[in-house]
Length: 102
Image 1 (spheres, one colour):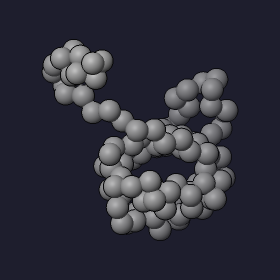
Image 2 (cartoon, rainbow, N blue to C red):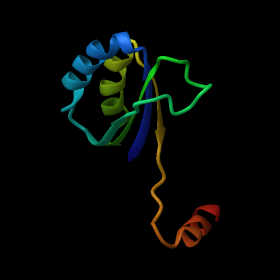
Image 3 (cartoon, rainbow, N blue to C red):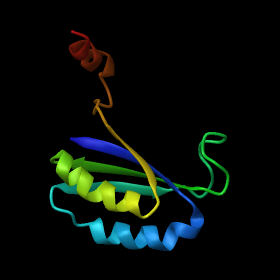
Image 4 (tube, one colour):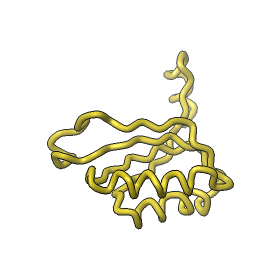
């Protein structure tokens, strides 16, 4: 199942966070599809000033695999929120949505 993780941390933790992310990068059962670090605050005023924000898209086989990545990152001082993603086709979204509506 695909997940999007939003991560927020203070810039002074960037080196520590990068080190932990490198350690968990090859965790079995989870594949990182894409990772982005914003060069500015994408969600003011929700995100405090002088915060770094990253978004990761992952494909996880289990909750345990997801936790094996998110827990060490959280211990490094990152506030992260992981949410499942419903994949929708690029065209034909209305038809896909009707299937889920019942």
